Length: 157
Image 1 (cartoon, rainbow, N blue to C red):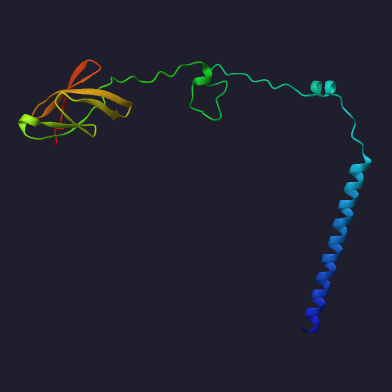
Image 2 (image 1 turned 30 degrees about the vertical axis):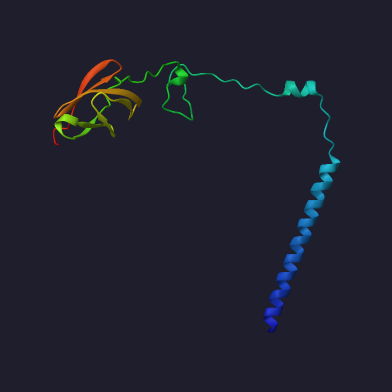
């Protein structure tokens, strides 16, 4: 090492030691000040009266306020969101027909049925129990909740 490098290292060491000393003095002063100022003792009765009570006002309409977590919700205003009720069989889709005329099979919402069979199928609104009454050459007649309907293949098939 040359002389300049040694001087630079010595200067750096001097700065570090000075900083450490100043930091130690600051911490000691803070600790002394903390011990010197006694904290007044409080009783439980005085503590309860010092705490302010929170007041929550439920808005009556969207102009008065909204739920920050669900800003598009109308629940806080007492307005009921009525879900759109779809008939149970409206989400049934005839996906395919197969088999010979005397033993036809129909695929409805991904499940294969023969005439007279009853089972559950999945729909976007939940599971629905259907009974296949008849399978025709281009359609299937099903019964859902006692209501009969005819399902047709899409016209582009």
